[in-house]
Image (cartoon, rainbow, N blue to C red):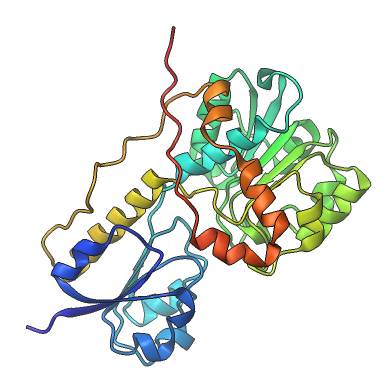
Length: 340
């Protein structure tokens, strides 16, 4: 029986076990092209790999695993029409992104964190952890998630306008969607920034185009918002140098880059691939990552990770965005808060 041929983006770690069951070709994302995937049965990719007709129309590919939460780099309707199964890794790096949020906040706030109101836009895998940790730290929490609000009903939801008026911190954790009633492309647009009332700290660690970067620059220059914490940018890796210069914390799309997050993502990719092709279960080397901490302390958020180091590196050499991202040293996730 001919071995499967799997093309793996080489920055997806922990997949050496695949070599025992498949012919594995590891390539940098720039070399994953129509020519190099033509004879592949499956792909394992990240967000930089655009998977659509231009890449796959002449290929044998029937399965795509993306070791990421997002799927906006995959043309899902086209893949479905061609019988190509495409699966992501939902929640894999959610604790790491939540860690990024609080580690960043601890370096820009100027009073006890319990005195702040935080508005969370998108309350899925990441936003739910941010919510839980924020409540544990004594913060007032506002939640905006129209799909969940419609599905679940009940009180406790806020509109984006209400968050713009009432929050001291606004953090985005939505997927990137460009159509439909809940489209998130440029959800933070000119109208959003003009409706801000407290010059809030704004965080984008979700997807770059959720926030209109040009308008964000104008709002920062006009004093409409406070500190900008930017991990996800429009037009990566050619990021807006004006936003870079104005941001208090600016990092190269590494908010989710924890050791445990990468382990979860790779294991989820393996699980999906084995199910699709009827292979025996495969397991990455190392310990199974623990679930996210139920609660954290301000001290551990401050101590565990310093985003100012990554900010200094990016501001010193913006052209190195992709290199800084691809060669990032994975950090451990925040530990569980210990009482007493």
